[in-house]
Amino acid sequence: MKFNRRLVFICSGSDCKKAGSKKIRKELKEAATAGTLKGHCKFFQTKCMDMCKTAPMVIVDNHFCKKADLKSVMEQIKKA
Ligand code: FES
Image (cartoon, rainbow, N blue to C red; front, side):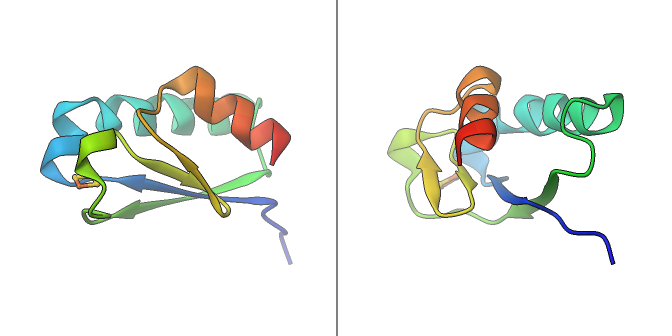
């Protein structure tokens, strides 16, 4: 059985999409297939998390990445 170390939830609500969540998800998936995150993460797309003022929202395990970008999410994945 494959063990996924990090659960990453990426909001796909309209405000987060406008703020770039789609781009973050694409970049994270590329990192996952390119080897950087390979085997360490499982990604989930969510509906609005009701925290639109801090869009784009990403949750890594139980840590909320507000106004997330690729750098902050990657740092959290490595730290969490
Ligand atoms: S659209 Fe992402 S938190 Fe509302």
